[in-house]
Image (cartoon, rainbow, N blue to C red):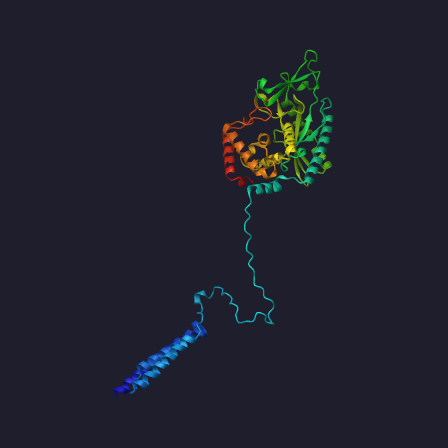
Length: 460
């Protein structure tokens, strides 16, 4: 009776365990899928059989009972070992994430008939960055920002020549008593020194002064004591009194006043010249720049924009020298400014022709870089040209390969000149080209040049 109760309780425990196993297998199919449920079922069946054998009554012959039990147990465990292990399915929280595509089967034939030629996607790796030297970057900057297309140069020269003819005809009709010479366009555009389109075309308006009635006085000998300027004095008043020359009405204190002539020409260019009619005739738009102290004309063509600087000029003390009517301040307001541009252009051209050098290219690079800089624009073409002239006389190798080195040398020379607050003119050592800069402007220029020497690529 006791044995029957014990067997009954074991059978009841087995039923409870079987029900639990069935419930676990049913839920495992939902969670783990068919494959996972199969693996779990085999494992659970093996464990269940081990438990049943452990709780079942022993046979009388232990040799007969133990041998099949152990043999069956290892067979059950071998089922677990032989069953391939499947990848578990992702948990429910990861079902919303994209599932990677299955890996291609290794057993599939490579050249199947129903599949076309499959080419593996090739990931295009970015090309390694080019490590350009400063010389190469400088040449690329010259090509992209300095060089002016030949077609634009030809068109600009044509427009400047046409404007010169129209303005000369106007001056002869408006002021028939004033002997103006032939208007001659010139400047960097005509000398191969045009840095982009920002440099204005120089339109010279020469004054034909009577020989013997006028003489030149150096600015250092006048009240202004300015070595950059000259005074044009009226002479022979005892033989040719005032009024003998048509230019006598522009005298101030016995000197030909550049300021009075500038005001006369400014009023004529702004109020009297019919620029819309001239522009329509030339196929462009011409407008005088009213806000500027200089006499500037803005020319807009469908292909380019051009600035023309109208410059009143008289002949200098030496052949080729020019004195310009420039808006000067203070005591020098009636004097005439010495124009160094013709001498600078001629000297640079002569030096480059001797050794096929790159001095003019260096000047163009410096002008382009400084013009677009927030602080270096104050240097201007005149100071940069003097720096290139100083280097051009000292250095021997001016081949293209040394252009980057000379660029840095020019920055160093400018920085040392600013530290000493002295940049003497190449043609007149008594003229300091830095006199027109204030102390804070010199500090800003020096700081910008120092940073440029530390990282010259940042200037390009």
